[in-house]
View 1 (cartoon, rainbow, N blue to C red):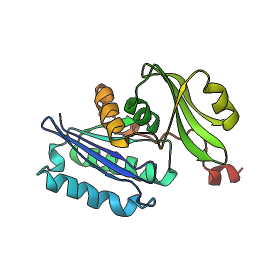
View 2 (cartoon, rainbow, N blue to C red):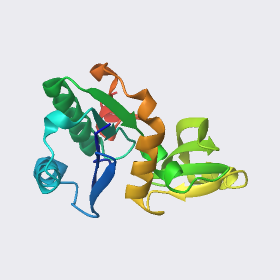
View 3 (cartoon, rainbow, N blue to C red):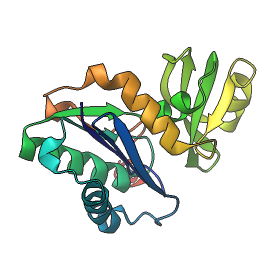
Length: 195
């Protein structure tokens, strides 16, 4: 099965291509949230450098968040467009999955910095979600650290986690392209200010 997976959820841009039982990857650590400019050229380079056409991809995958609101939308929209254009399946993995599958441990609390002393969090026990995605403050993180090993966005190999998460969740790939939606744990600041 040939899979193209992208992660545009943070300052980085990660692309993984599973093609004919080989794995190719690229990771740009800091693109300053310019995914709209860098994603398509990076995808073209990945495919051309490995002699792959988009029509050969069976599943298009996107990291759906949490993270950069704009980056997530760009990744999800790109994957949906490609899946519709080539009549292929989609798969979603979360930023939490990328962290948890990078450093599997019995009990981990994955944390994405939400700024202002808050975090998006998700708890795993043997790679099964036991604490659903939530928005918590530093006090709650300290409380949960007594029960969980903490993993944050800066911990470990993002590509390794993405590769492992995609492999583990591949059975969830679906032809229902509209099921691929961003994971927003809380409303954006702009949405909250509209109240």
